Image (cartoon, rainbow, N blue to C red):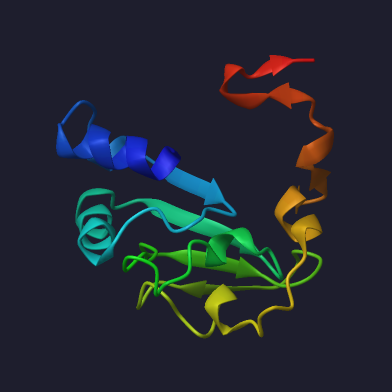
Length: 130
């Protein structure tokens, strides 16, 4: 959702693109190559943060309707202390795309920077504490 919103905002010039910052955590593939290229062109300050064996950044599969990621990925291994930045291509083998699948763990999708997001108690997009 954040990627879609940022691309909509910059494409329609609703906010100064130079002041917009897009950071996502465990983002799935949300568009095809044309979409990824448009985000790369229009949203200049962006990072997709991925964590070790998080399965969500690998969905939907690349061979399904041509889904791919936009740049740039910040890939953290295991305890999120060491990382690689992959900003040369959209799907780099030096980041999460280089992980041996199906070695995935939903725990890695629910745990970023010592925060277990499943314990935050938020309800969908309403962002209302339960």
